[in-house]
Length: 236
Image 1 (cartoon, helix red, strand yellow):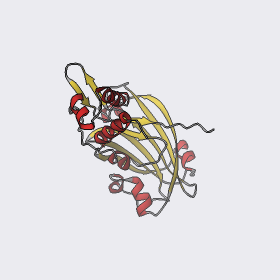
Image 2 (spheres, helix red, strand yellow):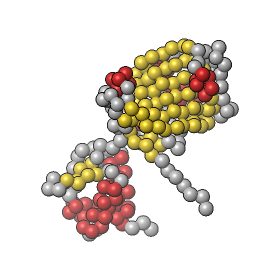
Image 3 (spheres, helix red, strand yellow):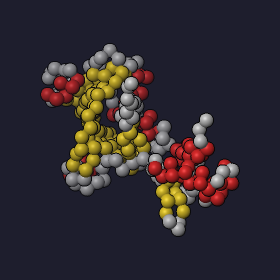
Image 4 (cartoon, helix red, strand yellow):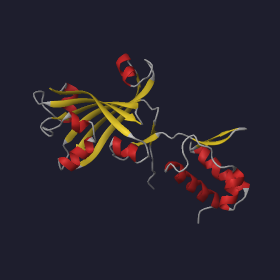
């Protein structure tokens, strides 16, 4: 059986993540929580410390304890689309197509997608927004032979839904690399950031169940509303 202070911390965490306790609102006073859960002040303080340590609440001396405005979490170890990932966390995702072109692949794109230089690819640039605020600039390359009916309308929605629900294909995995990146002027304008601001550049190649690469994507994460979560396990 879990200690009472952990049960209370987990209950409050669920209330925060479900939006019952709204971002930037004040958490009830310790005395109110004591009465609500029928526990001592020491127990409540231990529960609240867990929430502080997990970045869910902030204490302000003389003012009170407030709910933090949580970032959407990008779980790099589980393959979810942007819309699915952000929606699950109670935020509103949207996409704006900046560029949509049919073109021949560069050497890097041809290598990642296992194509010949004479093959056609779609290059799509999308601005990904969370609650109408730009958060990610995405550049995606996809083989035209796999997706001849790909369109701007499709890319305004969920790419993964299109691939799996409409095309009947099964997405298997994605290989990713993460590097720091300093914003150039053009990218800074898209993301409403200053030139030379440090962000994360994530390159990924996605594969279908049959082993065929279906996308090579570069994402520029602003990290204003996003955080990266990595879970490591040790085999024994």
